[in-house]
Image (cartoon, rainbow, N blue to C red; front, side, top):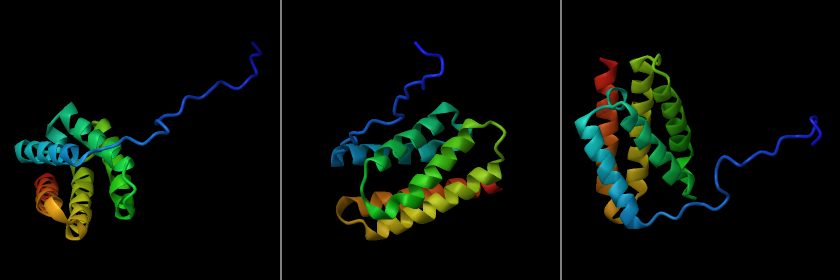
Length: 133
């Protein structure tokens, strides 16, 4: 093999989007609300990062137009939680912003998702406020 040949690259994410059922969305919302009630992402160890990664995967599969900022902020939060030197205040700002963006999505959501998303929004803002003290 020629040493100057390009190394083949494996795509980081699959080309086929993941299908997420309503039941899975509801379970993820419930799990996240339980998690946020019990702890904040900064003091949760690896579970906080796992929750963020789960949401990022689910939202990446969504074609809903109002989620771009949430996807971007989840990526930033993941990076922050991966670095133990990230100041709590920086994480608090992202959580508060995620809470505000989630509230916007909750306002537009119909059916059974409006109330849990509103609750999620409040929990994210509360977690952000707790960290910023």
